[in-house]
Length: 422
Ligand SMILES: Nc1nc2c(ncn2[C@@H]2O[C@H](COP(=O)(O)OP(=O)(O)OP(=O)(O)O)[C@@H](O)[C@H]2O)c(=O)[nH]1
Ligand SMILES: [Mg+2]
Image (spheres, rainbow, N blue to C red):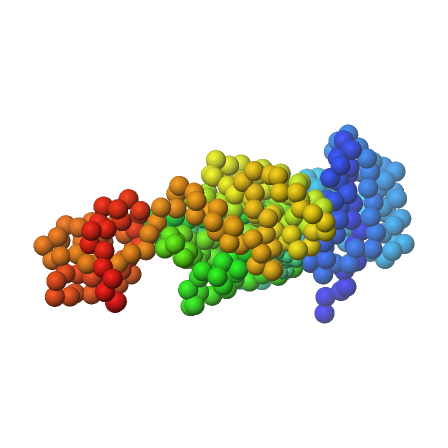
């Protein structure tokens, strides 16, 4: 059985950052998600972190004493540590040292269910390990639950060999991932061809993206659409889910739910998850979901905006969905632009959100049924290429098709509209 993990969390408050204590609280939740109990905290106000040990000498001493006093077996740092900092801290503290990135990668490794997510997390983990490896302890198996720091080896040549092994492994996994990426891209191409617009839910982890997706599936999805997983935990969603939402006005769009963001999201992850995140970069519109009940919601908005920028998705039209309003006490001042106040839990404001989405220009999509005379074969072949044909029936006076198409196509061909029941 795994030994119970007890930790001290450590952070540097750089330049008196007002978000610092929230970040430490979040670090504690990340530890919790990894089943690590946090029993102490050490912080230091600094202009910049110490190059060699992250903290100053006095604080390191204080940390050393606390480790032994509290019988701690792991120390967690709020920032990503450099390879030499990890080595120096290992030596000075004689205790396992990990950082925020390791925790995030560990949580993701635990949550990854699909092959694609597993490969992406594994690649990110190895990319994190690569510059930090100082001799291979033979512990790079896929099953390994956490990123471990590998003990020092015997010399330069062995080190080079170890690096090459990891790089080879990364390339192998990337090649494996590539086939899945191509599949996903083909699916997306297919969807693009059908002309159905795509809307993506984005936002900080635990904001309620999946819950909103489920509310929309409940209200407007087809009965066979499966709901997505929603839960009060960090990184509940690790894969992209796409569902077709058909509004009462016959307009329809594809809605995708995807992985949430977090402060100091490891850059290895943004790289590794690029294919999953393409669902965001290729969307026609984004719904930025905000947990309005969280006191740090403004900071979460900034983190999400920064991440979208890093992905190159910052120019896509956006609507803000301020969620969890049921938890907000007092009157809500609805003064922000492009902002809808909702509660996915109580299904309040969902209609307004949908209304707002359907007002947007890109949503010019119509569901209709046309009877195309046999002599108009050219129209039929045009529609086959440009519309999403759901069913086809050959009648005595023409081909009866039910389909989704662009509003402009509908206007062009609505003379053929038919009310015959298929
Ligand atoms: N009270 C309340 N809780 C909500 C609301 N919307 C979502 N939640 C809860 O918030 C938690 C997180 O919801 P998710 O929908 O899983 O959040 P997410 O944004 O998909 O999270 P990740 O997938 O981890 O990024 C769940 O426990 C939900 O039940 C809401 O409007 N009100
Ligand atoms: Mg989710």
